[in-house]
Amino acid sequence: MDNGAATGLLLAMAVLILAARVAGSVARSLNQPRVLGELIVGVILGPSLLDFLHTPSFGLSVAPIEETIQHLADFGVLLLMFSIGLELHLAELRMVGKVAGFAGVAGALLPVILTFPTLLLFGYGWPVALFAGVTFAATSVSISAQVLLELGILRTKVGNALLASALVDDVIAILLVSLAVALIQPPGADQQIGLLAVLVRMIAYLLIAFLIAWYALPPLMNWIHTHPDFAHSFGVPAVAIVCAFLFGWTAEHFGGVAAITGAFIAGVGLSRSHETIKRQISIAVTNLCYAFLVPVFFVHIGLQIDLHTFPLNAIPLAAVLLVIAIASKVIGGLWGARQGGFTEAESLQLGICMIARGEVGLIVATLGLSAGVFRTGEPLFAALFLIILITTVLTPPLVRRTFASTIVEAKVAPKRQKG
Image 1 (cartoon, rainbow, N blue to C red):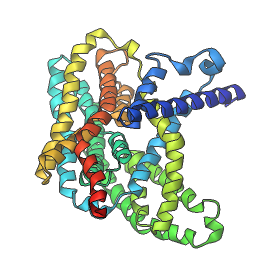
Image 2: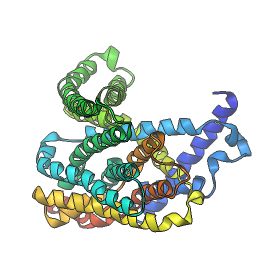
Image 3: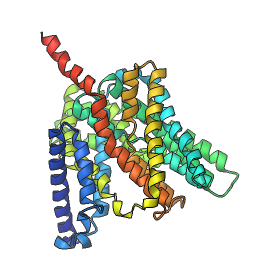
Image 4: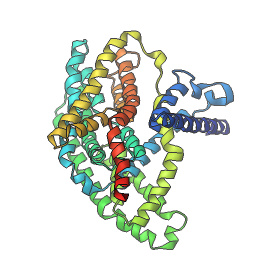
């Protein structure tokens, strides 16, 4: 990157981080989560209104900074999921294992089941209908998890169920994407073998990654902590971040699953480390995430939206698909949680948490573009993009409203204990 591009990147990052901080503070002052303000300011700064990254002034329009911001956003969501995994306690997850199984499977399959026939009725072919359904199958757990983390209730029963359900949902969504890609390819004798190989590869990776994270990472961190030459100058957090990156890489390269899944697994393994070590890692990663990378991630989602290109003839289709996108996740999560023994209120909370599609939905939609299923100028792709944005922006206030009683109970409980 030349000096002009580097200078443009400095200005862009300064504006994005400051805007995220101000918008997040405004959202908090209105009793809304920070992430909502960060998402909205991203839309304002994006091509929908200001188109900040393409401003001729200050050399921004000639600086190739969009790809760099994309990579920083990827780092942000990866370390966010690593941090969430670090704060996890598997003993609490085991208590919601049945809920996760039912909710994860239902939450991934129901959007496909409802979207597929709907798009056939609108005149689309089955490959397009199938891939659109798979786009809605994905859940962006980072959106809801971030809100629950802000509210201090991520480690509740519903919060643990969300994280566990997201793991199941991620596996099902990746399987569905692989299935969709395989089905739209020209017929071949190796397709069934290919699908079976995808399944075996995914299960094998998740099992091996969990075993390595669970049994190898804590002893490694304990060893580093007891050797000053290695632990000096933030050695423990540095190696922890290396583990997050390596597990993220292996997840995509060897397992065929999202990088954030690998980082999450690394965090879960390191959650077994000694409390002093865990606190060092948590403080360092949290500072890096929330001062720099996580705001970039959420603003970046809004930066990708260009409402000017949205065709008016896509509004009826978008309205129908929006209802399906929201209802399918809420109903799937609610039904799954009820089957697992949650109360009706807890089941509704879990269903609401699964609405956001966020970066995961954008990734699947982009895969559809690469495979030639979608085209950027068609009403359907514009509708999918808008729905991903709406579900992502809509989820934080809905989560906050749905968990209002839980927040009150969480604040009252310590006072009762003191009394």
